[in-house]
Image 1 (tube, rainbow, N blue to C red):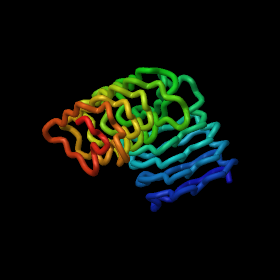
Image 2: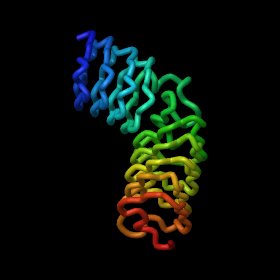
Image 3: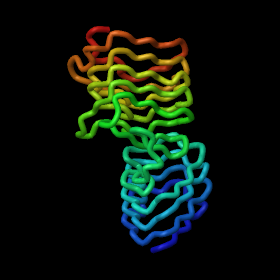
Length: 239
């Protein structure tokens, strides 16, 4: 299987749909496609380029994992979710030109990060979305102490900055609209949080921890108009 043309009637490619098609060279995706499922193109090691239609909103976990030849990716402007390690070990991932400091970018998306490179993470201006688990500590020793988001960031996906126990300061985008579930969870050193009035969906962003998970958290500013959901500040005994 070297070439695929997905019919116009298809709106979702389900989990692992083309997983392991190691000879696949070309894929044509229709306008109207909205979702690529988990591991959809995982291990398509010969795939070199792909154009994602403007209709696409969701790229699930490990969608292009280990697509080692995938260096040319054209994304639309309506992506609202990029899953955990969606482009890990792809050609794009291994191209140093796509990294700035500890962050990996794809157009206006920050799709991956490293937690053991810089104490201060400055997401570049123009970035619109931070992917799910982008800066999650997965066994690495995180040295992140400060995160600075530009005002261009509108969405922070779930678990984006979780598990960074040295994180003290989170400077939020003034225009962020969505803060995903557990986006800031397991950051026991966190001292302050500022929630802008632009937020329309902040769901359980500190997780649902047992005990005093956030002993250093003493200052929270929630601006007028912000909409919070779920259990937001459990485990914060000094608030």
